[in-house]
Image (cartoon, rainbow, N blue to C red; front, top):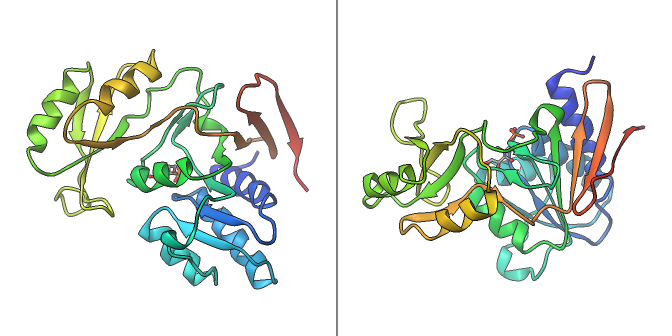
Amino acid sequence: MTNEKNMKKIAAEHAAKYVQDGMRIGLGTGSTAYYAILKIGEMVRGGLNIQAVATSEASERLAVEQGISLTPVQHMDRLDLTIDGADELDDRLRLIKGGGGALLREKITAYQSDRLVIVADEVKQVTQLGAFPLPVEIVPFAYEWTVQSLARLGCSVQIRRNLSEGFYVTDNGNYIADCKFQLITHPEELSMRLGSIPGVVEHGLFIGMADQAIIGCQDGTVRILHSGSSEAKNIFDS
Ligand SMILES: O=C[C@H](O)[C@H](O)[C@H](O)COP(=O)(O)O
């Protein structure tokens, strides 16, 4: 039986195999993307030449520690590949992201990438999104009003707090509203409604963005899902 950490690791290390010399790479955020950054760091120290951008300050620090030099975004056009985690994903590769508070930079990076590969453990794969509270990044000004607007969509809302009980502040100086819906039956419609609320900077529904998901399974295999295909295969990674 593979534990959660190892499921994340096998998924992330499988994804790192897609990274090739000369590529422009987006580095994701979170405990699964962490393993991809470690693996890519190892490849860079072994001579791989890439240009990279990170989706959070935490991933920036990790990348630098690993010997991956980062390129300022203004010096990069499109990215070839971004490898990132997710909090939930369904069979159509619709995602909830932002559990680690990095959704805004992640979405900007994913949008600029030719290919977005999601890495996750199998617990994250669900038939319907919504058990995980949807993170929404909101501006601090009049956040109470924005919370009211979010709640009118039929969810209960909590402003995320940090360990010292103050409000958690994102890398962009904003707050995160965690929105608990019973289940998200129409993610596309919800995405549009969230986007139309003033005060919402960005939300954690990623729809039509992921090209592939690599899922680490308890039996030690990885399951690979492709966008637009209902077929999945489990393979032993070597
Ligand atoms: O804001 C954080 C990101 O969206 C993460 O990629 C997501 O929360 C998954 O993180 P983890 O791999 O730690 O479960």
